Amino acid sequence: MNLKKVQKEVWENKVNKGFNTTNVELEFCLLYGEVAEAFDAYRKKKDDLNEELADIAIYLLGISEMLGYDLEDEIVKKVSKNKKRVYKKIDGVNVRVSD
Image 1 (cartoon, one colour):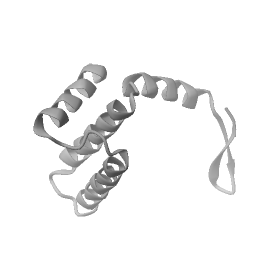
Image 2 (cartoon, one colour):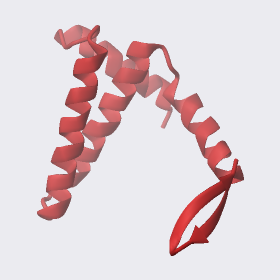
Image 3 (tube, helix red, strand yellow):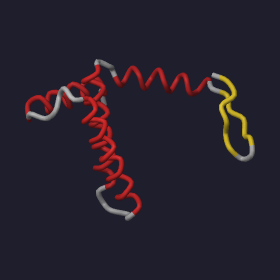
Image 4 (tube, rainbow, N blue to C red):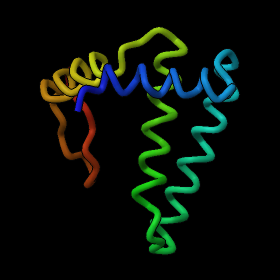
């Protein structure tokens, strides 16, 4: 999968279908709704959890495009950063002690 290409396709679909392309706050609210739907599907063991997870990814890609971020590049950078972080268990909880 080419996430950069998918991000552009998500954006093109938003534009072509007349969906919101300017109100970032609205997109975050809609994303929150999709996360809630995914949680509900998980909790109730619904068959459409996979689609709800895909909706979350689609909203993230759309918001990234709206804000001018290449989500694929940002994910790669963040995964690398997370690998370097050091954690220590304190009272049974992993706490980051260094980046």
